[in-house]
Image 1 (cartoon, helix red, strand yellow):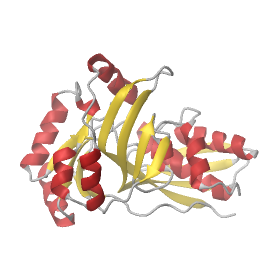
Image 2: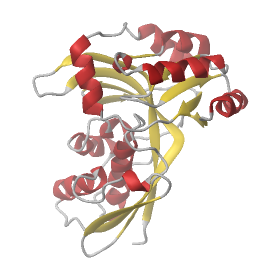
Image 3: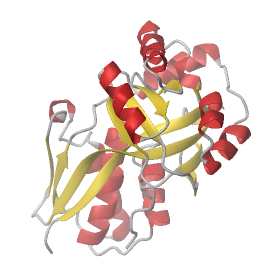
Image 4: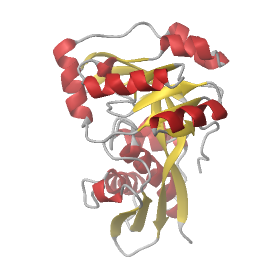
Length: 281
């Protein structure tokens, strides 16, 4: 079979609500996650063994050994399907590393979809998401390639219909998710019930979304995050929040033209949410 290529969209959490630390060491969360037009790509091709390599503007921060989530995803899928983990995996790395945009998890999700085809596993997206949960907490929500509401530690997902939304992201690198959650443990503050925000997101009510976005992991994130948020709002964004575990910040915009204007003002990247699910074969 020829090489299989899959996009690996970055993600944005419209809200991220942390409900508490679990006995297994993970945190119970609730979040609305959108895939973005900012994306990596993963190519899987037949090979005698299993290897991974990365290329692109952010490739230098990507491990290529067993600690790489793409390699872990490949081994998990091979075990589930009863096949030998034989593939050459190439990651086109456009998403900043350790930025709160879910790049590594997106790559793992894309690898699961690509290898599912390459190896003829014929697993549906639900089963791929289950396998993804053993790889990383964000992986299950990124397998479908569409907006999802995620609960549990991220493994409990359900599709969410949401019109396309435009954002400007100002990428920053260098925060481990574990460190962000450790800061939350010190404060233990849980955000509001997101029902009104979810209703606004479902209807495309931009002002309702702007009024409701929040991220419980922002507490203790440091002055840079607050400064970036203020800069986005000053440039015209309707509202701003930290992406995931940070330190990247995103600002909500009215449309693509507005996003371009705000991006130019803050040296950010205009992006849109991706609609529609990836195929599951």
